[in-house]
Structure formats: structure tokens, C-alpha cells
Figure 1 (cartoon, rainbow, N blue to C red):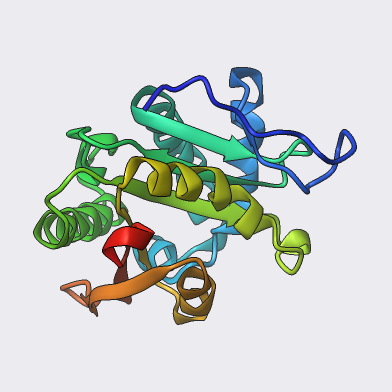
Figure 2: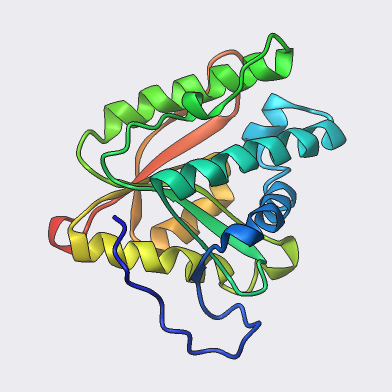
Length: 210
């Protein structure tokens, strides 16, 4: 997983037209970007309904997610840090539940319910070595500029080269066409128990196995 490959920068400095590995010093900046970009996603609204409290929660959540991805996978962003893709590498025994610091609050109970169910579905649907797209988010002002596609391309190319499938979950059906354009197909779907939102689990197979 830790190959010393890199993306060739073909755009002027400061452009969003290329994806680069996240610098450690930029981690907090990416926390803020992802928290804002994904604040209104259905699963996060299910966990915490209040907008301000949810944003505070997400800053802690994405801080943990970025640390987990740095240790267990790779993170790609753009030079201006206007989005990020967090990946977990193949063979890592990392679950969503293991990333969470649980407490007795109602929000944490809902979060625990959410990630426990997702972990179970993940383990059922894909048992082979694979790449896991943990999170993908872009500043709202840049969401119509193909930044998401730029961010996922390096690891999708790596997956094809290494003959690995990719896996993700989404809670927003508006995202399905984007992922389908990048080779993902719905492998399962359902609803989080206890009044939670709908979700779709998607798998992308390498070209010679699709």
C-alpha cells in the first residue's frame, strides 16, 4: 500500500486540477473542509439534528478519520485543500466502530448504532482484500467542478493496477450517478435500524473482474 508513487502535477500551483497526498500540517484544514462539506449528509443529520452541535461533532469525527486514514491508508486532497478523499488500505482490520470514542449520550448511541450496522454490512459484502473509501467531500462552492473525480482517481488507478476492488457506502442517492460513472455498482442497500436513514453499499471491481 505504501508505494512511493505520486501524481504528476500538470496544473499551476493552487489549482484544483490535481490530487496530492495530504501534508500532515494541513490535516486540521481538511478537518474543517470535510466537516462543512458533509455536515448535511443524511447519516450525520440522523446522529445529531442540531446544526451547530453536529458541526462540532464532525470536527472530532473527521479528526479521528484522518488519523486513521494516515495510519492505515492514504488521503488525497487538492493544493488549495478544497476537498479530500480518505481511504483505508487492503488488509487493515479497522472498523468504523473502532474509530469512535463512545459515551452515553443519545448522539453517540445513534452513532454507535450507525457504524455497527455499516461494519456488519461491509464485512458481509466484501471479504477479500480491497480499498475502502471512508469519506469523500468537497467544499460546496467547488462541487460542480469535478473535484471529487480528481480526488478519487489516484486510488482507483492504484486499485486497477493492483487488481483490487473498492468499497464505499453512501447515504445520499444523489451521489449514486457520480460513483457509477467511476465504475462502482450497488452491492447492497437498506435502512439503518431504529429510524436511521437509507444507505447504499457499492463495490467497484477491477476491469478484468467486472
